Length: 464
Image: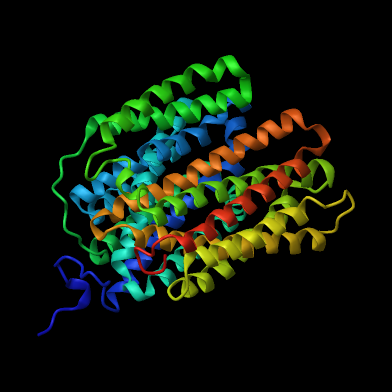
């Protein structure tokens, strides 16, 4: 009797998994990613309710969100390196398990301190999911379908981000805030069972894990983000010391890692022109996206007089448009250069941001909505080809490092964009939102130029 494709126990073939195992593997990847993305959006919406019920101040309750994001950012590259050492499947399944346990701990928390600690545990699990996600997609799909797979991944992420506020509102309308986290437990258990059954098996590298580099990486990224947040909220004195500490840790990390064959921070991959340019494009474009994401809700509510519910609905066309354009761009990325597709997408994205900056106080929902759609279509058309270029530019043995760097670039760009918005609100006064959008437009235009530069680099990998 022949074995079922789902019972295959050997390492995954170089050119993807067979059908139907490929579909089950993709479902396991999507379930975990959707949980981690939804959880970030849900916590943001529910923050006032949680703060009120835990009798915490607004400033203190921000750590419910910050602890999760900080844990993810600090752990992404170390867990990607651990995935290369132990096998991507093992680290991914462990990440889903830790995320699920963290969700249960959140649901059982009755104090701000306990909830913050549980959110750190959740962030550690989410880092295991996000750092390995792209590597698993690469081993799940054949090379000729990699762009399509990455495009569909972007659809899941976009839809999860779009429905997050609605899911949070629906749960809070029927149950207490603890259920926002408790719903993850059965979903996480199902995702673990499916992942054990279907995810591709890869050969571990057997390289020793560099704990010192992992510690320096955590200090560099952690102190940088904390310092920048302090700088934006409290002024120069509060943040400069942490930023100086981050700089020292970064220098020590570079000196330790720069000449290694397979460093934790993938300097070997950043030397590949197409990889380095794609990472730079990703950071800049996500900074532009976050400039708009953080500035627009204030404009909709404070200038246009929309309610919180209406604001959520007005923000929704953007991620839905990403979900429409990302699969098409992913399919095209299997045939055309990412530099060209990304440049076109970012040019459209820049145009959309420029159009948003022209909104007037009497703007209708339709005038806002179609501009948001333009932004989403452009960003989605850029994102899939760019992610494919990053993943495919790395050797198969360094797929984990490429995926970890991709996720790190996204989070760094979002952090810089959010902090830049704070600067505009502090200094620009009534024109803060328009100026932030114009800055985002300029940044996206620069990113489009950087993307087009990739057409002049050697195509070291298919689709670059």
